[in-house]
Image (cartoon, rainbow, N blue to C red; front, side, top):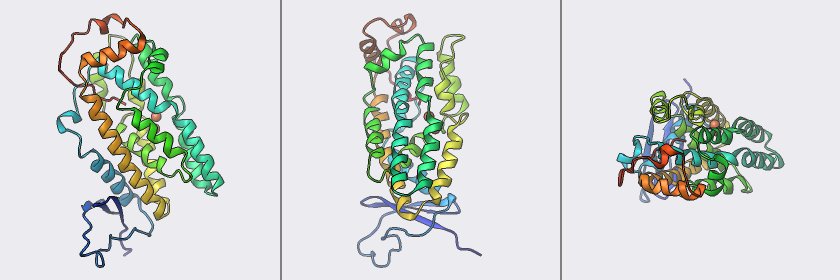
Length: 300
Ligand SMILES: [Fe+2]
Ligand SMILES: [Fe+2]
């Protein structure tokens, strides 16, 4: 019988993730004293497999999110929080096709047409997703273009910056780890999450286009599956880099989410008001101020 594939990666100074093709995943603390007998002390060099690759990708996300406050992890959505999240969704989508194409061009130059082709395909699939967020904002009576032009939620800025930086690196393989992180988190959203948001919207208003397509009901699930298969096919050095970046992106994302989730309704309303330069649609400006209550779920 063929031996099961085992993959491993060191993501921080003192934590490595190890995963088997069979689906087992564990976290490992390399110890100096045992370094010469520790088989995971040196970077892996072997081939990947879908089972071990998904273990490391998701292990990296779990580790990155380990610091997020549990009580904030799945808050109840509010309309104001949802609008802020849609603005964030716009900003994490608007430059994606251009950024991925740029990274694809670099891999073409580097003589890696298979990576270029994968990124080109991703760029095509992501095209127009920023428009979905804008349509949703407009459906909620928000001046979409003006709002996104004047406002990027604080917690989203570092994430956008990270992706921009990754895509212009000399060897931009890390952008795959970033994209996996965002898509995997989106694919966790279930029909009930969408229904909850739908229930906040006025009757007859469809403002969940972005959310639906970035959930377990939309294309994210296929994107995630395709990415796992592609990453598993990459050489060990590339996989290591992708896993490490998945972890870094998860850290940045978790930190940003924490930051956004800690805002009160009043703070978010004020941010929206400032961005549109005054009056908000009636149902928002008359939104009952909930004082210190928190709970803007980053929807996308
Ligand atoms: Fe997307
Ligand atoms: Fe996607």
